[in-house]
Length: 201
Image (tube, rainbow, N blue to C red; front, side, top):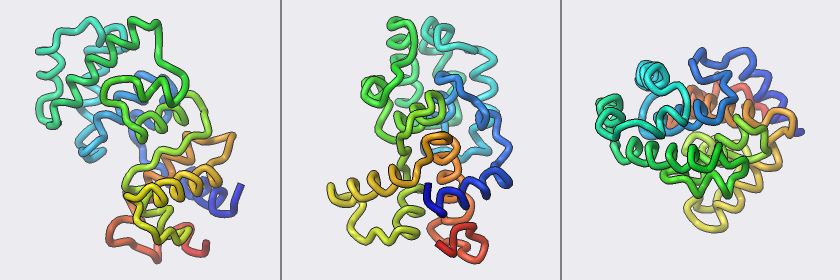
């Protein structure tokens, strides 16, 4: 692993936010939190996440739900296509007898894109997969000097290759969550570089 990886994980171990999904390895709970966190702040998601799990504690319970009830529980989170896709994917997972355990299979689920598949694969299944979102793009671009457009095929390849080179095989989920945390708290669009744990890198 690189010095960057060790430093980042050390910072994460000491500063990880206390969030109800943080220590979860259950793919259903990881997936649910990641879908809810799309376009929504973590502090807003907490109560929705807990209420949703109280009503639908397993993917099988969600698969058997009525769409009207799911949308009612989702009320206030916005982007309702997320809730509709959640229900479709839950029925697909339950019908298959469980979650796919690789990125390709995860991406076949309704509403699961590259980022969400990487997050589930690394956090729930311990796979060495990046979860590249806006936060990771900022961190990777700044720390590793990626100057090409991140929207271009070349930029996407550079981001993925750089992320893969830094992900530790022992802690891929923690690494991705550390990157998310760093991008959300410090390496923001207007970064606090004095507080950055990896500024020396």
